Length: 234
Image (cartoon, rainbow, N blue to C red; front, side, top):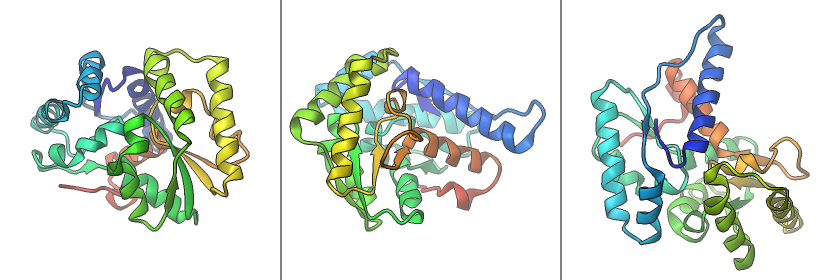
């Protein structure tokens, strides 16, 4: 796992992967994991300054260390950081499980052909993530600019610090309602912290939690079901 992006959602990954393995194996079984937890303060600054090559180099070095430590697959615990997926995947010989491809496979299996996407401004406005989803024949829509800006603010000013507010919960609920009114069949939580504000099982429109979907793919890989994991390798 390459985490710390933020540590808050990385903790969710760690918990969900271990619980998933334990559910399958029983007893006191847990997941064999190696975690590279990066400094999100430094990493976030590079993102907002547009220094993506430097950020990619940090991720690539983390991936090399994981492979050298015996990892047989890698999960990058961040949707936004998949902007640098190709640079990271290129430096290792083990699969890097792509969160977008795995999520798109789930949407496709459920018959979803039009979905709303929320996440950081990078994930919502740039093509690196949307195109992975759209390659599966799924139309992707995003919030209006004002709502998109507020969601980005909530992520970087609140969620990555572990802060959950009622006001932000209402904002996300409003966003999901608008997506439903716009004929979307589902909403993708394209930021691994957003599940802190949105209950996937308690909305009028189906919500796809990418953290849970990605963590489940890791469980499948650990238990030897590479096909179910939907792995994408370099």
